[in-house]
Amino acid sequence: MHVVQTIEGFRKALDAERAQGRVVGLVPTMGALHDGHLSLLRRAGAECDVVAVTVFVNPLQFEHADDLASYPRDLAADAAMAAGAGVHHLFAPSAAEMHPGEMLTRVAVARLGDGMEGSCRPGHFEGVATVVTKLFAIAGACRAYFGEKDYQQLTVVRRLVSDLSFPVEVVACPTVRAPDGLALSSRNVHLSGAERAAAPVLHRALAAGAAAVERGESRPALVSLAMARIISQEPLATLEYAEVLEEDLRWRLLVAARIGNVRLIDNIEVQAP
Image (tube, rainbow, N blue to C red; front, side, top):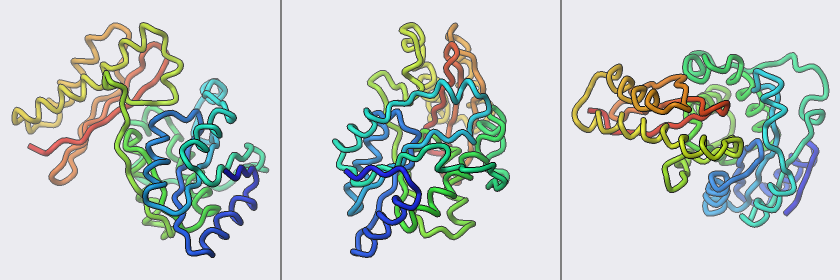
């Protein structure tokens, strides 16, 4: 596996791959790799000739400095997992490499980043859109793999690619879960034992919403209430939102809650009633 820490080095490496007629699969991450990330890497490996992963904790998408400082980092472990998954190129730039001076340019996707995560984390999606734009500009033509767990982010990235005409195909991959339903996340490492036991309440809430829809409930507000009710029954959980997005013949159910001090999100897709 080729490890590179400079923008120019990463760009040249992927340009050389494409010059040989190879299709590049790109997996952007903030590190702290887990089985959810590995599922993206393996999907990219199955569908592309070359797999590249980026590991960069993007300061632009953190509202609070302490949240940025506490984000888990272990590049050596990430590199070992990436190599084991068959990654060919790992791009791990420093903050100074990605942002050598004051960033005067920001990328914002209107409306799609409003509400839900956008309301709970002001400026988050502007930070995401800006760093993804930069990564796509560096990487060039590729297939980019994103997990559905961060569904609003996925929606923002898809629109960004469409509006800015990037030569990138965005590939959505299913959420990977623990046996008890908890969506895998780098933040899960911060859960205490009791909090980890409580955390699957998000998945139970989604299941309750799905069950309401299956029974014929067609009012999104009442589906949201059914999900919120489940989370309210867990003493360690504080609900941030329970939402329903109506998307043609499918609905997307989304929840966010704090389990202790750890903020978790999750979502599922259901057939519209």
